[in-house]
Image 1 (cartoon, rainbow, N blue to C red):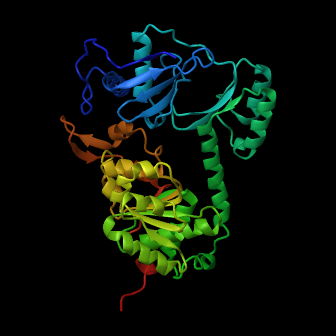
Image 2: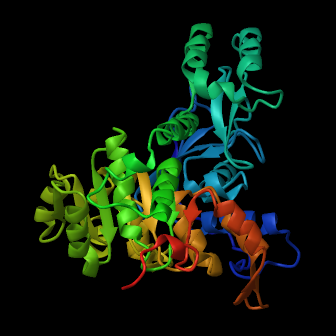
Length: 441
């Protein structure tokens, strides 16, 4: 194993601005250059875990964060390059600071560049232009794998719809052809995500208005039933109804619908400190017999509470920030986040900690019209779908107008953004649903 530190005395070029694009660079060139700049400045260590058997595969460790990322680098702009970090998966650039660090490390240490492709075939998730499941046919048993690919992939190697239902059969057939065949985990996760959405679509058909009314100890208004079905169908969604339209009851009903369908067992509610006990009262009111616990107290007490058997665990954003290392090891079936607009700044400790919570399903609640605050919309949407509006640099260029100094002066393409988020975000105003609400006495 080769290892090296990040100490380099080479003279650095002038720093590139994160706010103003250099006139001699395209937007894409600018973003790639920024990532190379970070790679030159941050303290990262590179290593080859097994150059003989895994040529072209590297580990890159961010020393400050004690996080290690897997990198595959097979040459400039190679379509097989990969990094396990989220920036690589969402930027559509084909690179990130970790890949750029590997390139610098190879150059500085005069190491061989492994451009050869592995002989085994594999199914992987491409992030170049949105997420696409694709196949790469290697040299082993090439004829057999080409025939297999024709059944499940188009001429560009992109997954056909039938693979969603026949994934298990395809995987078994591929392993029979060559045991070294690889079906990468992110591709499997993506297929499972699509299959589960189809499954939820079928479940919804059995939930009539009458059955929805059995979920809670109260009847839902028609627009609330619509919101519950929307959130259930999405799996991860944002309900941004105007204040007073009952976002809380919709979130609880969604959680109960997931539990009633045997898709979930436990629920974590994350909310401002001032709302912890209000959430507990609402849950116990709408779901009689539900077991709830408010997570608070000393670190040891909170650890016990996180691990307790109550169905609903209610925790404040401040506790989430304190317990980030503990929460990384836990998993919630359903995550409800209230007043998420408070996390509009992506870089705050609370916002970064909230992103560490792992869950199968999420209902994100916001009381503000996010479509009029695009930076907030992007940040909040990441809790529901990190890929929908990405990459941020392109989103910003297309929709956010700035002056010469980078200050936001306006927005554009709002209708386009509205259409794009409509599959994840639902918002109703009191005026829109007035006829469905009871008249004031």
